[in-house]
Amino acid sequence: MIRRNPRGDTPVVHESAFVDHTAIICGQVIVGANVFIGPYAVIRADEVNAQGEMEPIVIGANSNIQDGVVIHSKAGRLVSIGENTTIAHRSIVHGPCTVGSFVFVGFNSVLFNCVVHDHAVVRHSCVIDGRVIPERFYVPSSTKVNHDTDLATLPRVTPEAAEFSEDVVRTNLQLARDYRRIQNEF
Image (cartoon, rainbow, N blue to C red; front, side, top):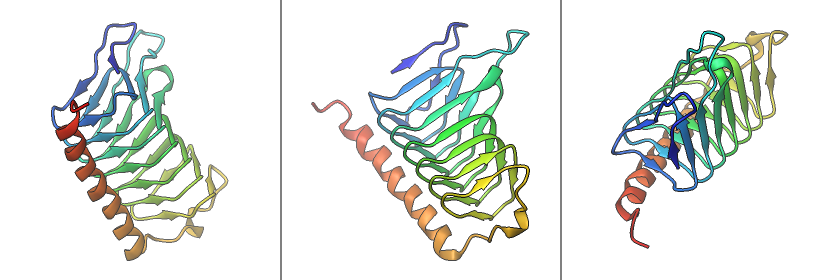
């Protein structure tokens, strides 16, 4: 469901994107080309700051927002997701937050008030709170990264992890095309 927020902002969804009919996209949201938004995802840009202003939620081209993902922002702060990025099932991205391009965020992960740079991998059930994850860093499953975390303890992305991330993007690009093709067949 595409709907406007109380301020009157309406999402802008590129014509080549696929949005499942059970997903909710509300307010000042910009969805790029070939994006796949899966069932029951909620992307909601509806809060404003004290001055009544709001920054958008932006999802870059070729990215995929999988089933049950929630993307929102406190007080209208920017949420930016780059190109060719995966936000996997049931993850939460809560702004302010910037996720770069070619990033993989695994199942049930939570990102808040953080930056995840290009080509990083955040595996399943991680929490990234108030930190910057450098380019090509790998956050193992169930890791909590906050102001107490020594980033030097995090490994670099392996070629196998990078290939897995790229394969997920390729799969979801094809799904976006296939679902757009059959969208109204039933």
